[in-house]
Image (tube, rainbow, N blue to C red; front, side, top):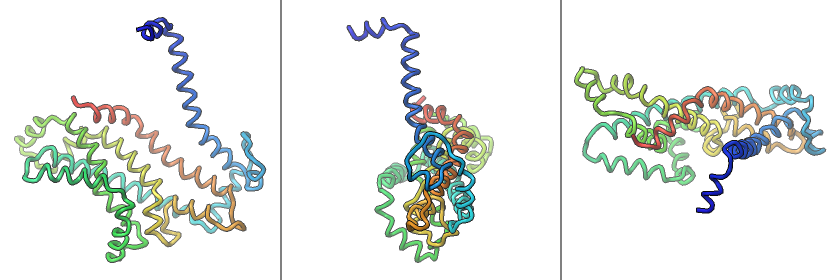
Length: 285
């Protein structure tokens, strides 16, 4: 009771100032690492060996030109990462929404078992199945290609679970029944009615899937062997692992900075759906 009286005694303006100070502090704490990254991307390798300085240098273009003209195919890495991340985001969102709609809207034998199996698969770490996955793609002659990074995105248990929760909270079955009475096919109902309703949740999952695939290092490192087919995380690790004669911290930092900007752009474009999508999917109506 005493604590409650004290909190009520604090003026609203004072509490608001304290809240802003705390939020600004944590925002700066999150952004300071990006600032250090951008500062280091403007400095040469020799300057970075002398220690950190908060003042930008003048070697940004030099680092970029050295990276582009070096032995690492950076442009191919960007193209490969865009292809893989874009396809993974679209496939996982679309087919997970289709699976969630099938589990939610239809009654069939083994429905609960299918839903439980999908959730059980979600609990299995990818590292556990890595060896079997590599053996499978070797038998299918898909090693050192981008297909093994894209096709498994069709089955995304985590995306399915989130979209299923959102669908239970926001999809009225009466709307589906009305469309069936009007003679609409199931695929038309899904594409014309379900997907527009699911747009906020799917936008959130598109961001998560794109970022997760863009930053994925484990699977591409096991599958891709040719430099021109490698994605950006693998190329960054390869650049960092160069011998001391070719190691250049300026190139490493400029490559990391360049790899972050596409993710930031995608997030800024679709971020308006995040708050509404997460809150609607987490709370049932």
